[in-house]
Length: 486
Ligand code: NAP
Ligand code: MG
Image (cartoon, rainbow, N blue to C red; front, side):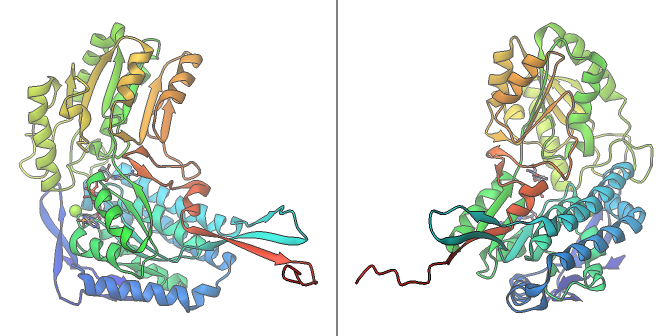
């Protein structure tokens, strides 16, 4: 059992209060590590270090090329150490090792992408009607407080750190208490790569007090949060006191819409992949499966049969397609929805704890059919392998049901009819819409939600924009006095 330390001002340190948080392997329920339980004083130290690094350290005068090169170094270290990192991630959050390996490559790619983008942040010349030169400059927002969830731990850390650092910000990152290990594994690399102390700080601790202290501290200029809508609302309120910039990537209840003309086999695969990848612990999970009435019974039968064959197992087994849920708390929550669903709809697959395992937070991939869109299992984010299948009659019904949700993160539509596909793409109120696929995510394309799924966009040029301010500069070219009062 290993005790890890967190990163504050270029040093790996313990919490001042001396408290530790146990980290579990959710497949065995054994404690595999301990990490510091940061309190407000630790968070304050980290914010002050980030503040000093931003205001007066060498980072303030770093060039975009230098920042880009540092990010490339982190990307390379992740690639070089990808096998070990994937194993840590898989043990920490329970995701299948094969999925964790993809995640490590995605995290490295994100650092590379923003390493390249550091030198492509451009200002603008404004065509003002005067003898003047008017410019807009892009400048870093300042100290970014970054709070992330447990479902894609290193990927989420990369999505936060890489654009902020490319922009010239300094960062205090708080990983989720359940899954801090990969972020702490790479913590020492920033110093080694040449980042000045205080530019990157990684503070482990509970949402309250550590996350809350980061939001409340007057030294953070911006809070970037990914997590539940519930916590997102608290953060937005608490950030109001000193008008911090806030971006929120929250939950979803995303519709995956199947028309009768879609390729049937691809549709079945797409429905299951859309909702069961990463144990369904995916913010964009296609957890509402909308199916056109004429193929409805055949569709339900086919996804039910295939769901029953999904291979659950130890996360490190390469044949495993679904691991345990991340924690006991998440397990209880998902079990609760499985039982609720039995009262609200017709259970066709799963519905229980996966009884072949004597330990670990395993639940069966679960499908409910004939779900009414007003029921709780269709409205509330479950964040586990539970699908709600809803029949529809016409295109307009599909769109109405799809949009009848407080969320608006993602959606997908499956059809061979290009007119219908594009009509649905336009009509659905969501930040990401896939056609004949669901879930592929690319660092080049914007990610974020409509409605209660949050605001702001990560990835692509949009992702770095959220870490930049815009400064207007007016340079007068007239050498004579204005003469207004003469
Ligand atoms: P969560 O409970 O909202 O926690 C997210 C983060 O916020 C954690 O680091 C948590 O710390 C921290 N936190 C909790 N209370 C806080 C407070 N009062 N002030 C400041 N920080 C606080 O969410 P989760 O259970 O980890 O993750 C699942 C949720 O994330 C789902 O709703 C999912 O949809 C969403 N998600 C969204 C995206 C996206 O891109 N849109 C991606 C992934 C996940 P501790 O964990 O240490 O308590
Ligand atoms: Mg864990």
